[in-house]
Image (tube, rainbow, N blue to C red; front, side, top):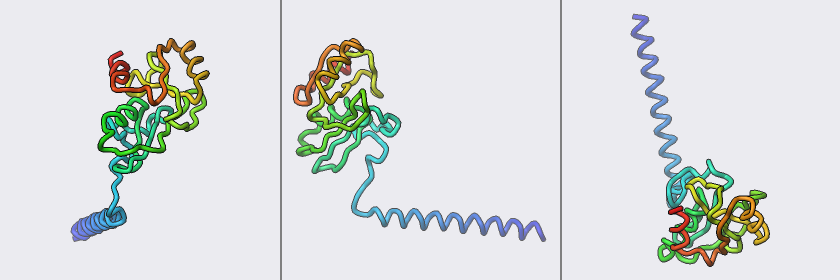
Length: 163
């Protein structure tokens, strides 16, 4: 008889835990009604966990999709070009300066390609806040080209991807 009470207590315990968890899930869903976190932790382009690559993270805001986070500058630039019509005018582009890791304006940054430094997706666009820093990096890391944000086209991205 003692065993039966023991098993009933265990069953009751797990049933109450399950009900409590279900209630928490419902409350959480109710709190977030009306907005989504589809991009939470995952790159808006490739889905990789951008929190794993803090040196490479990039972001921008879109009127159509809100704040989008990326695992790399390559994913950010590709999305900004490829989905331009769906995104609307993007603002607040931020990338990390390669040398000091500070967030900088992605539209005024200088991007080096063709270097021996790889990003999370392989060959990438290495950002700098000044042209002088980008030129120094080219010398130190066998970089091939320096681009402004406006100079990055789909052809440039394709050449970086195919390196």
